[in-house]
Image (cartoon, rainbow, N blue to C red; front, side, top):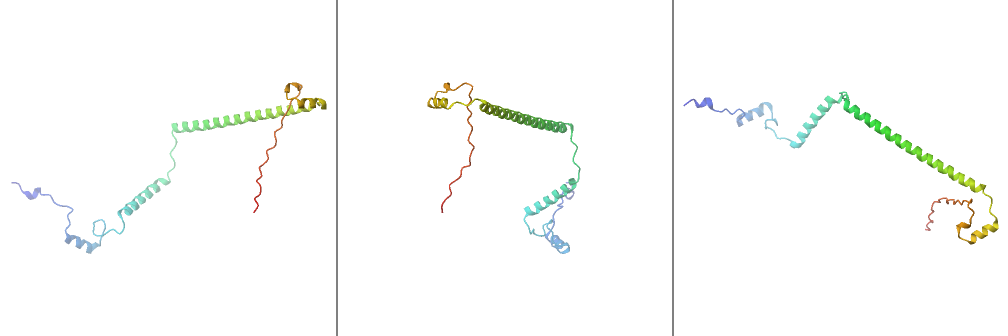
Length: 162
């Protein structure tokens, strides 16, 4: 048989109680080697360590200049700007068209009012005849009737008596 001592496994991390007591006396208690108890929960310690690492990482990359845009990114941004401009142009054209149609309607309405003022006044006896009849065919064809909308009035609430 070969020498068994040469094949035996040595326990590297084994520390006897005597060695542990001596280590406590010489260098004091430490958390790393298990000679002291933790005064805070492990969660808080790990969170604190993580926050420190994150702060160091952010500090290293805080002062770096931003990276340059590549060709795809610039193309995308150009298309985005162009689509915004096109949309704004369409909105402006739409608003201009609505404004023109409104102005044309106002101009046409003012022409109708002018035509009414220019028509000869109707005689009183003809008015009495038309009032009695409800048939619109008896009115002259050149006469236009314009109904003005009443101005909208704000509703006033009655005051409460105390």
